[in-house]
Image (cartoon, rainbow, N blue to C red):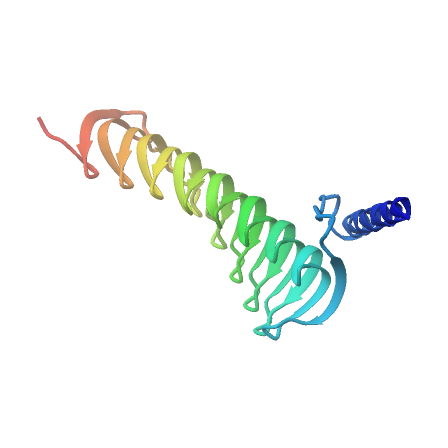
Amino acid sequence: MQNLKTIFRAISVLSVIVFAACVTDEGSRGTTVNVAPNASLQQYNGKMSDGSYYEGTLLNNKPHGFGTYIWVDGKKYVGQWKGGKKSGQGTHTWTNGMKYVGQWKDDKKRGQGTVTFSDGQQHVGQFKAGQYNGQGTHTWTNGMKYVGQWKDDKKSGQGTLTFPDGQQYVGQFKDGKKSGQGTHTWTDGMKYVGQFKDDQFHGKGTYTYPDGKKYISRWKNGKPVLP
């Protein structure tokens, strides 16, 4: 009798594992869903306690595994969940047309992803704690484009900023502004190579005119420091 109880217990645990694996294979693109032996993973299709709609798998009455969640205000998320939070690969769509496709952790954008704004702007790159952090490319609708490093949603580190009229800056950024060593090139051939601070020439730098003449000086707040 004791042996039969042991066998039935083993079959029950195996069934939960197999079910979780099936959900993973069909819906979550290979991400492992960890389910404790005494937990109950179930398929659900209906309203949640907050009035939102959910279709997918639940664990302890929380979205877990793969599922689609539609909030009362119209927001929609399709992807992976863990313990009731967006975690893994997923797509979140807002009612204003904004969309994020990428990785999540604890309900925040984390890892590689693409966010497309309602006005057409797009950011492709790395995220951390819901913000741009790491390497990324941001494209504006007016043609401006930045390719480089980010920190807390601001250009920070090495990058290339191309302006709509063709001007280009290649160099260092801090808090979203040109700061540090860099090169700014204008479409008429003018070029400045040197130091920047808060988007202005600041420090030692060389200004080259279209005819090839050069002006070497120390700069402060965008103006040359006279001897």
